[in-house]
Length: 102
Image (cartoon, rainbow, N blue to C red; front, side):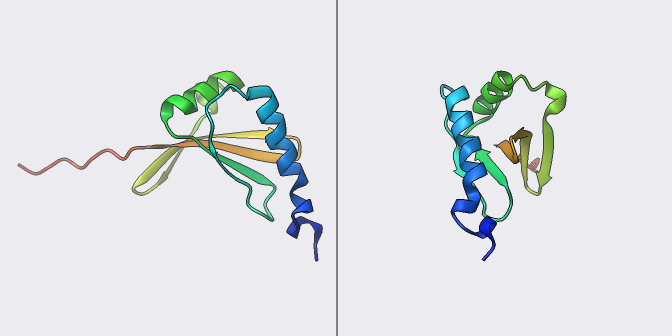
């Protein structure tokens, strides 16, 4: 069995999470996923306010934020390399309601 397929194989992800927790522990909490086999971490934030707090703390300029659309859901995302791991920090943008017909 490949090491990346084991819990031990996710050590880099856990180290990246620990680094973020130590450095940015006062920032809003997130829903954390560490998908096996990917070397990535996903931090889903509750609100755009929380996303903005993370963006500012990380020093990411507005131009470093990506807008992703997966109809009908849209999200703002930051990709942050931490060691050998890529951390995806994101928040959902509420879809704009369709205009009602008169």
